[in-house]
Image (cartoon, rainbow over all chains, first blue to last red; front, side, top):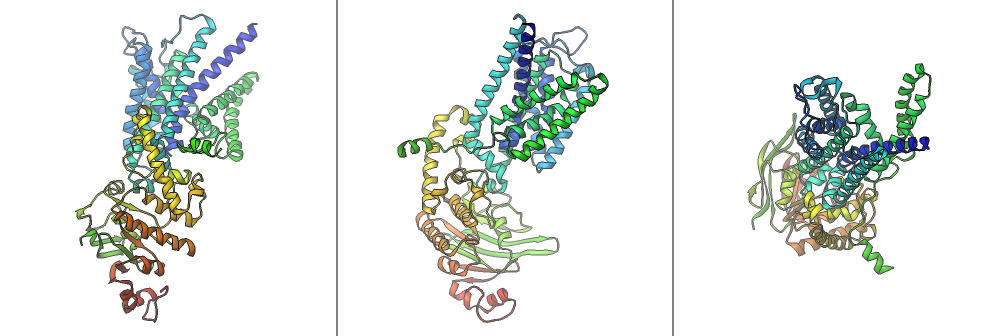
Length: 322
Length: 261
Protein backbone atom coordinates (compact mmCIF):
# COMPACT_ATOMS: atom_id res chain seq x y z
CA UNK A 1 0.00 0.00 0.00
CA UNK A 2 2.76 2.39 0.95
CA UNK A 3 4.63 1.51 -2.22
CA UNK A 4 1.49 2.25 -4.21
CA UNK A 5 1.13 5.67 -2.62
CA UNK A 6 4.80 6.23 -3.35
CA UNK A 7 4.36 5.44 -7.04
CA UNK A 8 1.23 7.58 -7.13
CA UNK A 9 3.07 10.53 -5.63
CA UNK A 10 5.89 10.01 -8.10
CA UNK A 11 3.48 9.96 -11.06
CA UNK A 12 1.74 13.10 -9.81
CA UNK A 13 5.00 15.00 -9.44
CA UNK A 14 6.18 13.73 -12.83
CA UNK A 15 3.04 14.97 -14.56
CA UNK A 16 3.07 18.26 -12.67
CA UNK A 17 6.58 19.12 -13.78
CA UNK A 18 5.94 17.69 -17.26
CA UNK A 19 2.90 19.98 -17.45
CA UNK A 20 4.94 23.01 -16.39
CA UNK A 21 7.44 22.16 -19.14
CA UNK A 22 4.51 21.91 -21.54
CA UNK A 23 3.59 25.53 -20.70
CA UNK A 24 7.16 26.52 -21.57
CA UNK A 25 7.17 24.45 -24.77
CA UNK A 26 3.81 25.88 -25.87
CA UNK A 27 5.29 29.37 -25.48
CA UNK A 28 8.39 28.38 -27.43
CA UNK A 29 6.21 26.73 -30.08
CA UNK A 30 4.40 30.01 -30.66
CA UNK A 31 7.75 31.74 -31.17
CA UNK A 32 9.65 29.05 -33.07
CA UNK A 33 7.04 26.68 -34.50
CA UNK A 34 4.70 29.34 -35.83
CA UNK A 35 6.93 32.41 -35.94
CA UNK A 36 10.33 30.94 -36.80
CA UNK A 37 11.90 32.95 -33.95
CA UNK A 38 14.98 31.20 -32.56
CA UNK A 39 14.68 32.09 -28.86
CA UNK A 40 17.58 30.41 -27.08
CA UNK A 41 16.92 32.37 -23.91
CA UNK A 42 13.85 30.56 -22.58
CA UNK A 43 15.46 30.37 -19.14
CA UNK A 44 15.60 34.18 -18.93
CA UNK A 45 11.83 34.59 -19.32
CA UNK A 46 11.24 31.62 -17.03
CA UNK A 47 13.43 33.34 -14.41
CA UNK A 48 11.61 36.66 -14.73
CA UNK A 49 8.28 34.94 -14.09
CA UNK A 50 9.57 32.71 -11.29
CA UNK A 51 11.23 35.52 -9.37
CA UNK A 52 8.43 38.02 -9.96
CA UNK A 53 5.83 35.69 -8.48
CA UNK A 54 8.19 34.51 -5.71
CA UNK A 55 9.12 38.01 -4.57
CA UNK A 56 5.53 39.26 -4.63
CA UNK A 57 4.01 36.31 -2.74
CA UNK A 58 6.75 35.31 -0.25
CA UNK A 59 5.89 36.29 3.33
CA UNK A 60 6.94 39.72 4.59
CA UNK A 61 10.11 39.40 6.66
CA UNK A 62 11.33 42.39 8.72
CA UNK A 63 14.73 43.55 7.58
CA UNK A 64 14.41 41.89 4.17
CA UNK A 65 13.27 43.44 0.94
CA UNK A 66 12.28 40.03 -0.41
CA UNK A 67 8.64 39.15 0.23
CA UNK A 68 5.45 41.18 -0.11
CA UNK A 69 2.99 38.53 1.06
CA UNK A 70 0.55 39.18 -1.80
CA UNK A 71 -1.99 36.56 -2.97
CA UNK A 72 -0.68 33.86 -5.30
CA UNK A 73 -2.95 34.89 -8.17
CA UNK A 74 -1.47 38.41 -8.04
CA UNK A 75 1.99 36.86 -8.24
CA UNK A 76 1.13 34.68 -11.22
CA UNK A 77 -0.59 37.46 -13.18
CA UNK A 78 2.28 39.86 -12.43
CA UNK A 79 4.78 37.21 -13.53
CA UNK A 80 3.06 37.03 -16.93
CA UNK A 81 2.83 40.81 -17.26
CA UNK A 82 6.47 41.37 -16.32
CA UNK A 83 7.61 38.64 -18.73
CA UNK A 84 5.56 40.36 -21.42
CA UNK A 85 7.27 43.69 -20.71
CA UNK A 86 10.73 42.09 -20.75
CA UNK A 87 9.77 40.17 -23.93
CA UNK A 88 8.65 43.42 -25.54
CA UNK A 89 11.96 45.17 -24.80
CA UNK A 90 14.08 42.21 -25.87
CA UNK A 91 11.92 41.77 -28.98
CA UNK A 92 12.15 45.42 -29.98
CA UNK A 93 15.93 45.22 -29.87
CA UNK A 94 16.60 41.69 -31.12
CA UNK A 95 13.87 40.66 -33.56
CA UNK A 96 15.49 42.50 -36.44
CA UNK A 97 18.34 39.97 -36.24
CA UNK A 98 18.37 36.91 -38.45
CA UNK A 99 17.66 33.59 -36.74
CA UNK A 100 21.11 32.51 -35.55
CA UNK A 101 21.97 36.01 -34.34
CA UNK A 102 18.67 36.15 -32.50
CA UNK A 103 19.66 32.90 -30.77
CA UNK A 104 22.99 34.39 -29.68
CA UNK A 105 21.39 37.58 -28.43
CA UNK A 106 18.72 35.76 -26.42
CA UNK A 107 21.27 33.37 -24.86
CA UNK A 108 23.25 36.42 -23.82
CA UNK A 109 20.25 38.15 -22.30
CA UNK A 110 19.25 35.01 -20.38
CA UNK A 111 22.78 34.68 -18.98
CA UNK A 112 22.78 38.35 -17.95
CA UNK A 113 19.50 37.80 -16.10
CA UNK A 114 20.91 34.73 -14.36
CA UNK A 115 23.96 36.66 -13.19
CA UNK A 116 21.74 39.50 -11.98
CA UNK A 117 19.72 36.96 -9.97
CA UNK A 118 22.89 35.43 -8.56
CA UNK A 119 24.36 38.77 -7.51
CA UNK A 120 21.55 41.18 -6.62
CA UNK A 121 21.13 39.65 -3.19
CA UNK A 122 18.94 42.49 -1.86
CA UNK A 123 16.27 41.55 -4.41
CA UNK A 124 16.68 37.80 -4.96
CA UNK A 125 18.55 36.54 -1.90
CA UNK A 126 21.35 35.49 -4.29
CA UNK A 127 22.46 31.89 -4.45
CA UNK A 128 20.48 30.99 -1.31
CA UNK A 129 17.28 31.60 -3.23
CA UNK A 130 13.83 32.60 -2.03
CA UNK A 131 12.20 30.26 0.49
CA UNK A 132 8.73 29.88 1.97
CA UNK A 133 6.96 30.81 -1.26
CA UNK A 134 3.28 29.99 -0.66
CA UNK A 135 1.73 27.10 -2.50
CA UNK A 136 -1.98 26.89 -3.34
CA UNK A 137 -4.13 24.12 -1.76
CA UNK A 138 -1.72 23.80 1.19
CA UNK A 139 -4.60 23.09 3.58
CA UNK A 140 -5.54 19.87 1.79
CA UNK A 141 -4.38 16.61 3.36
CA UNK A 142 -1.46 14.53 2.08
CA UNK A 143 -1.47 13.55 -1.55
CA UNK A 144 -4.60 15.62 -2.32
CA UNK A 145 -2.47 18.70 -2.06
CA UNK A 146 -0.29 17.43 -4.90
CA UNK A 147 -3.32 16.25 -6.86
CA UNK A 148 -4.90 19.69 -6.60
CA UNK A 149 -1.71 21.35 -7.83
CA UNK A 150 -1.51 18.90 -10.72
CA UNK A 151 -5.13 19.85 -11.50
CA UNK A 152 -4.15 23.53 -11.55
CA UNK A 153 -1.22 22.85 -13.90
CA UNK A 154 -3.42 20.68 -16.14
CA UNK A 155 -6.05 23.43 -16.29
CA UNK A 156 -3.39 25.98 -17.24
CA UNK A 157 -2.03 23.67 -19.98
CA UNK A 158 -5.55 23.07 -21.31
CA UNK A 159 -6.46 26.77 -21.33
CA UNK A 160 -3.16 27.68 -22.99
CA UNK A 161 -3.61 24.91 -25.56
CA UNK A 162 -7.08 26.16 -26.50
CA UNK A 163 -5.93 29.79 -26.68
CA UNK A 164 -2.94 28.91 -28.87
CA UNK A 165 -4.91 26.55 -31.12
CA UNK A 166 -7.46 29.33 -31.74
CA UNK A 167 -4.57 31.61 -32.68
CA UNK A 168 -2.85 29.01 -34.84
CA UNK A 169 -6.02 28.39 -36.86
CA UNK A 170 -6.88 32.08 -37.18
CA UNK A 171 -5.71 34.49 -39.88
CA UNK A 172 -3.18 35.70 -37.27
CA UNK A 173 -1.57 32.26 -37.18
CA UNK A 174 -1.69 32.11 -40.96
CA UNK A 175 0.26 35.36 -41.22
CA UNK A 176 2.80 34.09 -38.66
CA UNK A 177 3.43 30.94 -40.68
CA UNK A 178 3.71 33.00 -43.87
CA UNK A 179 6.35 35.19 -42.22
CA UNK A 180 8.15 32.05 -41.03
CA UNK A 181 8.10 30.49 -44.52
CA UNK A 182 9.05 33.62 -46.45
CA UNK A 183 9.40 36.97 -44.80
CA UNK A 184 9.90 38.98 -48.01
CA UNK A 185 6.71 37.63 -49.56
CA UNK A 186 4.73 38.32 -46.38
CA UNK A 187 5.94 41.93 -46.42
CA UNK A 188 5.17 42.24 -50.15
CA UNK A 189 1.59 41.22 -49.36
CA UNK A 190 1.08 43.90 -46.78
CA UNK A 191 1.97 42.18 -43.52
CA UNK A 192 3.85 44.25 -40.96
CA UNK A 193 6.48 41.59 -40.24
CA UNK A 194 8.10 43.39 -37.30
CA UNK A 195 4.79 43.90 -35.53
CA UNK A 196 3.58 40.29 -35.94
CA UNK A 197 6.92 38.92 -34.76
CA UNK A 198 6.87 41.13 -31.70
CA UNK A 199 3.35 39.93 -30.85
CA UNK A 200 4.41 36.27 -31.08
CA UNK A 201 7.54 36.93 -29.06
CA UNK A 202 5.65 38.74 -26.28
CA UNK A 203 2.90 36.11 -26.07
CA UNK A 204 5.47 33.28 -25.97
CA UNK A 205 7.44 35.12 -23.28
CA UNK A 206 4.27 35.38 -21.19
CA UNK A 207 3.82 31.59 -21.30
CA UNK A 208 7.46 31.13 -20.24
CA UNK A 209 6.99 33.56 -17.36
CA UNK A 210 3.83 31.70 -16.33
CA UNK A 211 5.78 28.43 -16.26
CA UNK A 212 8.36 30.10 -14.01
CA UNK A 213 5.68 31.20 -11.56
CA UNK A 214 4.13 27.72 -11.52
CA UNK A 215 7.56 26.23 -10.77
CA UNK A 216 8.25 28.63 -7.90
CA UNK A 217 4.89 27.84 -6.27
CA UNK A 218 5.23 24.09 -6.88
CA UNK A 219 8.56 23.84 -5.05
CA UNK A 220 7.90 26.70 -2.57
CA UNK A 221 11.47 27.68 -3.41
CA UNK A 222 13.31 29.31 -6.30
CA UNK A 223 17.07 29.64 -6.64
CA UNK A 224 19.43 30.54 -9.49
CA UNK A 225 20.06 26.85 -10.26
CA UNK A 226 16.49 26.53 -11.54
CA UNK A 227 17.34 28.96 -14.33
CA UNK A 228 20.37 27.09 -15.68
CA UNK A 229 20.08 26.95 -19.47
CA UNK A 230 20.55 23.16 -19.58
CA UNK A 231 17.25 22.41 -17.86
CA UNK A 232 15.23 25.50 -18.79
CA UNK A 233 16.35 26.29 -22.33
CA UNK A 234 17.92 23.31 -24.04
CA UNK A 235 15.71 20.67 -22.47
CA UNK A 236 12.66 22.68 -23.60
CA UNK A 237 14.06 22.85 -27.13
CA UNK A 238 14.59 19.08 -27.15
CA UNK A 239 11.01 18.62 -25.91
CA UNK A 240 9.55 20.83 -28.63
CA UNK A 241 11.63 19.39 -31.47
CA UNK A 242 10.91 15.82 -30.35
CA UNK A 243 7.19 16.48 -29.87
CA UNK A 244 6.83 18.36 -33.16
CA UNK A 245 7.18 22.09 -33.67
CA UNK A 246 4.23 24.01 -35.14
CA UNK A 247 1.96 21.42 -33.52
CA UNK A 248 0.53 22.38 -30.13
CA UNK A 249 -0.21 18.76 -29.25
CA UNK A 250 3.42 17.92 -29.99
CA UNK A 251 4.40 20.77 -27.66
CA UNK A 252 2.50 18.97 -24.86
CA UNK A 253 3.46 15.39 -25.74
CA UNK A 254 7.19 16.16 -26.09
CA UNK A 255 7.64 17.64 -22.60
CA UNK A 256 5.77 14.82 -20.86
CA UNK A 257 7.72 12.10 -22.71
CA UNK A 258 11.13 13.72 -22.35
CA UNK A 259 10.57 14.67 -18.72
CA UNK A 260 9.54 11.09 -17.94
CA UNK A 261 12.74 9.82 -19.54
CA UNK A 262 14.81 12.48 -17.81
CA UNK A 263 13.39 11.54 -14.39
CA UNK A 264 13.52 7.81 -15.02
CA UNK A 265 17.21 8.02 -15.82
CA UNK A 266 17.69 9.97 -12.58
CA UNK A 267 16.13 7.04 -10.72
CA UNK A 268 18.55 4.71 -12.46
CA UNK A 269 21.65 6.76 -11.73
CA UNK A 270 20.43 7.05 -8.13
CA UNK A 271 20.94 3.31 -7.70
CA UNK A 272 24.57 3.48 -8.81
CA UNK A 273 27.39 3.55 -6.24
CA UNK A 274 28.21 7.11 -5.18
CA UNK A 275 31.42 7.43 -7.20
CA UNK A 276 29.43 6.57 -10.35
CA UNK A 277 26.47 8.81 -9.63
CA UNK A 278 28.23 11.99 -10.74
CA UNK A 279 29.36 10.38 -13.98
CA UNK A 280 25.86 9.02 -14.41
CA UNK A 281 24.35 12.48 -14.29
CA UNK A 282 26.53 13.54 -17.22
CA UNK A 283 25.51 10.39 -19.02
CA UNK A 284 21.87 11.52 -18.74
CA UNK A 285 22.70 14.68 -20.67
CA UNK A 286 24.40 12.54 -23.27
CA UNK A 287 21.35 10.26 -23.45
CA UNK A 288 19.05 13.21 -24.09
CA UNK A 289 21.32 14.32 -26.92
CA UNK A 290 21.31 10.82 -28.35
CA UNK A 291 17.54 10.66 -28.10
CA UNK A 292 17.24 13.95 -29.99
CA UNK A 293 19.46 12.53 -32.73
CA UNK A 294 17.32 9.42 -33.01
CA UNK A 295 14.08 11.43 -33.13
CA UNK A 296 15.51 13.78 -35.75
CA UNK A 297 16.64 10.84 -37.87
CA UNK A 298 13.44 8.84 -37.63
CA UNK A 299 10.92 11.69 -37.24
CA UNK A 300 12.57 14.76 -38.75
CA UNK A 301 9.51 16.90 -38.07
CA UNK A 302 8.84 15.49 -34.59
CA UNK A 303 6.52 12.79 -33.28
CA UNK A 304 3.46 14.90 -34.13
CA UNK A 305 4.43 16.92 -37.23
CA UNK A 306 2.85 20.17 -38.39
CA UNK A 307 -0.48 19.81 -40.17
CA UNK A 308 -1.93 22.81 -41.98
CA UNK A 309 -5.43 23.54 -40.64
CA UNK A 310 -8.33 22.42 -42.78
CA UNK A 311 -10.04 25.26 -44.62
CA UNK A 312 -13.16 26.50 -42.80
CA UNK A 313 -15.66 25.10 -45.33
CA UNK A 314 -13.97 21.78 -46.03
CA UNK A 315 -16.19 19.72 -43.69
CA UNK A 316 -19.35 21.03 -45.24
CA UNK A 317 -18.13 20.38 -48.78
CA UNK A 318 -17.18 16.82 -47.84
CA UNK A 319 -20.60 16.26 -46.32
CA UNK A 320 -22.28 17.37 -49.55
CA UNK A 321 -20.13 15.14 -51.69
CA UNK A 322 -20.52 12.15 -49.38
CA UNK B 1 -3.37 59.76 -69.27
CA UNK B 2 -1.31 60.14 -66.10
CA UNK B 3 1.20 57.59 -64.91
CA UNK B 4 0.34 55.01 -62.25
CA UNK B 5 4.07 54.60 -61.62
CA UNK B 6 6.64 57.22 -62.50
CA UNK B 7 10.30 56.28 -62.18
CA UNK B 8 12.21 59.53 -61.91
CA UNK B 9 16.02 59.51 -62.39
CA UNK B 10 16.61 56.48 -60.16
CA UNK B 11 20.27 55.70 -59.52
CA UNK B 12 21.56 52.68 -57.60
CA UNK B 13 25.19 51.70 -57.10
CA UNK B 14 26.65 48.65 -55.42
CA UNK B 15 30.22 49.61 -54.65
CA UNK B 16 31.75 50.68 -57.95
CA UNK B 17 29.03 49.04 -60.01
CA UNK B 18 26.27 51.31 -61.27
CA UNK B 19 23.20 49.10 -61.62
CA UNK B 20 20.75 51.91 -62.35
CA UNK B 21 21.94 55.13 -63.89
CA UNK B 22 19.40 57.96 -63.63
CA UNK B 23 16.75 55.66 -65.04
CA UNK B 24 13.40 57.30 -65.86
CA UNK B 25 10.18 56.02 -67.39
CA UNK B 26 6.47 55.86 -66.74
CA UNK B 27 3.92 53.08 -66.50
CA UNK B 28 0.79 54.65 -68.02
CA UNK B 29 -2.42 54.17 -66.03
CA UNK B 30 -4.37 51.19 -67.29
CA UNK B 31 -1.52 49.88 -69.43
CA UNK B 32 0.34 46.62 -69.51
CA UNK B 33 3.87 47.94 -69.71
CA UNK B 34 6.62 45.55 -70.72
CA UNK B 35 10.10 45.90 -69.29
CA UNK B 36 12.72 44.03 -71.26
CA UNK B 37 16.46 44.06 -71.58
CA UNK B 38 19.46 41.79 -71.37
CA UNK B 39 20.47 40.16 -68.08
CA UNK B 40 22.06 42.68 -65.75
CA UNK B 41 20.15 45.63 -67.22
CA UNK B 42 18.81 46.46 -63.74
CA UNK B 43 15.17 45.42 -64.25
CA UNK B 44 14.75 43.39 -61.06
CA UNK B 45 16.70 45.92 -59.01
CA UNK B 46 14.30 48.56 -60.29
CA UNK B 47 11.31 46.39 -59.31
CA UNK B 48 12.76 45.99 -55.84
CA UNK B 49 13.18 49.76 -55.55
CA UNK B 50 9.59 50.39 -56.69
CA UNK B 51 8.34 47.78 -54.20
CA UNK B 52 10.29 49.31 -51.32
CA UNK B 53 12.65 46.35 -50.80
CA UNK B 54 15.76 48.20 -51.95
CA UNK B 55 16.49 51.87 -51.38
CA UNK B 56 17.67 53.97 -54.32
CA UNK B 57 20.69 56.24 -53.96
CA UNK B 58 19.06 59.04 -55.93
CA UNK B 59 15.79 59.76 -57.65
CA UNK B 60 12.18 59.15 -56.67
CA UNK B 61 9.25 56.89 -57.38
CA UNK B 62 5.73 58.27 -57.73
CA UNK B 63 2.93 55.79 -57.14
CA UNK B 64 -0.37 57.17 -58.41
CA UNK B 65 1.18 60.66 -58.30
CA UNK B 66 2.50 60.47 -54.72
CA UNK B 67 6.17 60.24 -53.77
CA UNK B 68 6.66 56.96 -51.92
CA UNK B 69 10.21 57.57 -50.69
CA UNK B 70 11.04 55.52 -47.58
CA UNK B 71 7.82 53.48 -47.68
CA UNK B 72 8.22 49.87 -46.63
CA UNK B 73 6.99 46.96 -48.79
CA UNK B 74 3.93 46.30 -46.60
CA UNK B 75 2.95 49.97 -46.74
CA UNK B 76 3.25 50.02 -50.53
CA UNK B 77 0.98 46.99 -50.72
CA UNK B 78 -1.60 48.89 -48.68
CA UNK B 79 -1.27 51.73 -51.23
CA UNK B 80 -2.27 49.34 -54.02
CA UNK B 81 0.98 47.83 -55.28
CA UNK B 82 1.15 44.04 -55.62
CA UNK B 83 3.98 41.98 -57.05
CA UNK B 84 5.35 38.57 -57.92
CA UNK B 85 8.96 37.44 -57.67
CA UNK B 86 11.48 36.31 -60.28
CA UNK B 87 12.18 33.20 -58.19
CA UNK B 88 8.83 32.23 -56.65
CA UNK B 89 8.57 33.00 -52.94
CA UNK B 90 5.74 30.69 -52.05
CA UNK B 91 4.92 29.93 -48.40
CA UNK B 92 6.22 26.40 -48.64
CA UNK B 93 4.70 24.72 -45.58
CA UNK B 94 1.25 26.20 -46.20
CA UNK B 95 -1.40 24.91 -48.56
CA UNK B 96 -2.03 26.54 -51.94
CA UNK B 97 -5.38 27.77 -50.62
CA UNK B 98 -3.74 29.33 -47.56
CA UNK B 99 -1.15 30.97 -49.81
CA UNK B 100 -4.00 32.92 -51.41
CA UNK B 101 -6.02 33.46 -48.23
CA UNK B 102 -3.12 35.23 -46.50
CA UNK B 103 -3.23 38.07 -49.01
CA UNK B 104 -6.41 40.20 -48.48
CA UNK B 105 -5.85 43.45 -46.60
CA UNK B 106 -7.09 44.32 -43.14
CA UNK B 107 -8.42 40.93 -42.10
CA UNK B 108 -10.09 41.22 -38.68
CA UNK B 109 -8.71 37.82 -37.66
CA UNK B 110 -5.16 39.11 -37.97
CA UNK B 111 -5.65 40.69 -34.54
CA UNK B 112 -4.94 38.43 -31.58
CA UNK B 113 -7.96 39.65 -29.60
CA UNK B 114 -10.34 39.26 -32.54
CA UNK B 115 -8.99 35.74 -33.14
CA UNK B 116 -9.97 34.88 -29.56
CA UNK B 117 -13.10 36.89 -28.90
CA UNK B 118 -14.73 37.78 -32.24
CA UNK B 119 -14.75 34.38 -33.82
CA UNK B 120 -18.12 34.79 -35.51
CA UNK B 121 -17.02 37.91 -37.33
CA UNK B 122 -13.67 36.34 -38.28
CA UNK B 123 -15.44 33.23 -39.56
CA UNK B 124 -17.78 35.24 -41.79
CA UNK B 125 -14.81 37.12 -43.19
CA UNK B 126 -12.94 33.86 -43.74
CA UNK B 127 -15.86 32.50 -45.78
CA UNK B 128 -15.71 35.49 -48.13
CA UNK B 129 -11.93 35.20 -48.47
CA UNK B 130 -12.22 31.45 -49.02
CA UNK B 131 -14.77 31.96 -51.82
CA UNK B 132 -12.49 34.43 -53.56
CA UNK B 133 -9.50 32.10 -53.18
CA UNK B 134 -11.46 29.12 -54.54
CA UNK B 135 -12.64 31.19 -57.50
CA UNK B 136 -9.09 32.35 -58.20
CA UNK B 137 -7.77 28.77 -58.12
CA UNK B 138 -10.57 27.77 -60.48
CA UNK B 139 -9.55 30.45 -62.98
CA UNK B 140 -5.90 29.40 -62.78
CA UNK B 141 -6.70 25.70 -63.06
CA UNK B 142 -5.12 25.00 -59.69
CA UNK B 143 -8.24 23.83 -57.85
CA UNK B 144 -6.94 20.26 -57.77
CA UNK B 145 -3.95 21.46 -55.76
CA UNK B 146 -5.89 23.52 -53.22
CA UNK B 147 -4.87 21.32 -50.27
CA UNK B 148 -1.31 20.62 -51.49
CA UNK B 149 1.60 22.26 -49.69
CA UNK B 150 2.85 25.08 -51.92
CA UNK B 151 6.41 23.79 -51.67
CA UNK B 152 5.40 20.67 -53.60
CA UNK B 153 4.16 22.54 -56.71
CA UNK B 154 6.17 22.61 -59.94
CA UNK B 155 7.98 25.78 -60.94
CA UNK B 156 5.28 26.76 -63.43
CA UNK B 157 2.48 26.11 -60.94
CA UNK B 158 4.25 28.28 -58.39
CA UNK B 159 4.37 31.09 -60.96
CA UNK B 160 0.63 30.72 -61.51
CA UNK B 161 -0.01 30.67 -57.76
CA UNK B 162 2.00 33.87 -57.37
CA UNK B 163 -0.17 35.49 -60.03
CA UNK B 164 -3.15 34.17 -58.06
CA UNK B 165 -1.95 35.94 -54.93
CA UNK B 166 -2.04 39.28 -56.76
CA UNK B 167 -5.61 38.45 -57.84
CA UNK B 168 -6.76 38.28 -54.21
CA UNK B 169 -6.80 42.09 -53.95
CA UNK B 170 -7.95 44.85 -56.28
CA UNK B 171 -4.48 46.28 -56.76
CA UNK B 172 -3.92 49.54 -58.61
CA UNK B 173 -0.78 48.18 -60.19
CA UNK B 174 0.82 44.75 -60.33
CA UNK B 175 4.51 44.13 -60.93
CA UNK B 176 5.15 40.75 -62.53
CA UNK B 177 8.79 39.62 -62.52
CA UNK B 178 9.24 37.06 -65.32
CA UNK B 179 5.81 35.43 -64.97
CA UNK B 180 6.60 33.15 -67.92
CA UNK B 181 9.96 31.80 -66.72
CA UNK B 182 9.81 28.03 -66.29
CA UNK B 183 6.21 27.88 -67.52
CA UNK B 184 5.57 25.52 -70.45
CA UNK B 185 4.14 26.81 -73.76
CA UNK B 186 0.56 25.65 -73.15
CA UNK B 187 0.49 27.13 -69.68
CA UNK B 188 2.10 30.30 -71.03
CA UNK B 189 -0.87 30.87 -73.34
CA UNK B 190 -3.19 30.49 -70.33
CA UNK B 191 -1.03 32.87 -68.33
CA UNK B 192 -1.31 35.56 -71.01
CA UNK B 193 -5.07 35.02 -71.07
CA UNK B 194 -5.29 35.41 -67.29
CA UNK B 195 -3.35 38.65 -67.40
CA UNK B 196 -5.53 40.00 -70.24
CA UNK B 197 -8.61 39.02 -68.29
CA UNK B 198 -7.41 40.72 -65.10
CA UNK B 199 -6.55 43.78 -67.13
CA UNK B 200 -10.05 44.03 -68.59
CA UNK B 201 -11.86 43.23 -65.37
CA UNK B 202 -10.24 45.41 -62.76
CA UNK B 203 -8.75 48.42 -64.50
CA UNK B 204 -5.49 47.25 -62.91
CA UNK B 205 -2.24 48.40 -64.51
CA UNK B 206 0.61 45.96 -65.02
CA UNK B 207 4.34 46.24 -65.38
CA UNK B 208 5.91 43.02 -66.61
CA UNK B 209 9.55 41.96 -66.77
CA UNK B 210 9.78 39.13 -69.27
CA UNK B 211 12.27 37.47 -71.58
CA UNK B 212 9.64 35.70 -73.68
CA UNK B 213 9.16 38.11 -76.59
CA UNK B 214 5.95 36.44 -77.79
CA UNK B 215 4.35 37.08 -74.42
CA UNK B 216 5.58 40.69 -74.45
CA UNK B 217 4.39 41.21 -78.03
CA UNK B 218 0.97 39.82 -77.19
CA UNK B 219 0.37 41.74 -73.98
CA UNK B 220 2.46 44.84 -73.70
CA UNK B 221 2.09 48.39 -74.89
CA UNK B 222 4.31 50.27 -74.32
CA UNK B 223 7.49 48.21 -74.16
CA UNK B 224 10.48 49.72 -72.39
CA UNK B 225 13.96 48.41 -73.17
CA UNK B 226 16.60 48.75 -70.49
CA UNK B 227 20.32 48.20 -70.84
CA UNK B 228 23.10 48.96 -68.38
CA UNK B 229 20.80 50.73 -65.97
CA UNK B 230 19.22 53.12 -68.44
CA UNK B 231 16.22 53.21 -70.72
CA UNK B 232 17.44 52.42 -74.20
CA UNK B 233 14.21 52.58 -76.16
CA UNK B 234 10.50 52.89 -75.56
CA UNK B 235 7.48 52.30 -77.74
CA UNK B 236 5.33 49.66 -79.38
CA UNK B 237 6.82 46.20 -79.86
CA UNK B 238 7.06 46.66 -83.63
CA UNK B 239 9.12 49.84 -83.20
CA UNK B 240 11.33 48.20 -80.59
CA UNK B 241 12.04 45.25 -82.84
CA UNK B 242 13.22 47.55 -85.60
CA UNK B 243 15.55 49.52 -83.32
CA UNK B 244 19.19 48.84 -84.12
CA UNK B 245 20.37 49.92 -80.65
CA UNK B 246 18.10 47.32 -79.04
CA UNK B 247 19.53 44.57 -81.24
CA UNK B 248 23.02 45.67 -80.36
CA UNK B 249 22.25 45.62 -76.64
CA UNK B 250 20.82 42.12 -76.79
CA UNK B 251 23.48 40.59 -78.99
CA UNK B 252 26.48 42.66 -78.01
CA UNK B 253 26.90 43.86 -81.60
CA UNK B 254 24.78 45.02 -84.52
CA UNK B 255 23.47 41.78 -85.95
CA UNK B 256 20.31 40.89 -87.81
CA UNK B 257 17.25 39.81 -85.83
CA UNK B 258 16.63 39.82 -82.10
CA UNK B 259 17.40 36.66 -80.20
CA UNK B 260 13.91 35.67 -79.22
CA UNK B 261 11.83 37.67 -81.70
